[in-house]
Image (cartoon, rainbow, N blue to C red):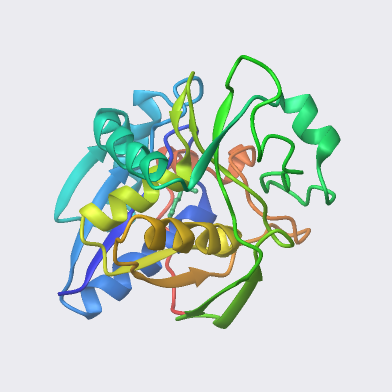
Length: 259
Ligand code: GLU
């Protein structure tokens, strides 16, 4: 049985880029007589708000996209993520890191490209340098992670070159996106993940987590990102293109075609 998911982060209003991705996810699921799960990824307590989650659901309905299960809220599933984090700890896949944000930036081995997590220099790999533990990091092996993306074909990322030891847990904040999304996609029996291609490199990280946790990984379909008229990737700051704005202006919902 095909199982897909719609996984908005309610830290702002959805825009046309999200709409394109969610439309594709919905389309692929319905074409295969699958089930679709709605999951609100509201882990970032400082930025996520219930009104954004409500607006996202209204936007999805306005786009004509329905779902069969949920909404689930990641903020209500913290005990589950903790259980899988302990499993990673018990198996020796993670280590405690005391580096501050500044120290991480300073010890970074490669320039930080875009939104990506910096490539951690490995300062605490053999033990934390200070008393205060700020994060638990996954020990990334120096090897290639390969997968076949259903939209983009074969993908290959090299551990410690393309991405470094990434955060899975913070004592102050709990699970990282990487851990929560893997636990959820596995426990919700998602068979195919459809999302934006900005997350392609994160898929390599997540595949390492699936292996470490003995969980079955789904297939992946990464959609091209929508850009504005200047070729700049749409982001939540492009307020004029927020679906809520279009909806409240009385415009017709955008129509998408397969790309
Ligand atoms: N919640 C993420 C986002 O809105 C998507 C995560 C995913 O699809 O894995 O960017």
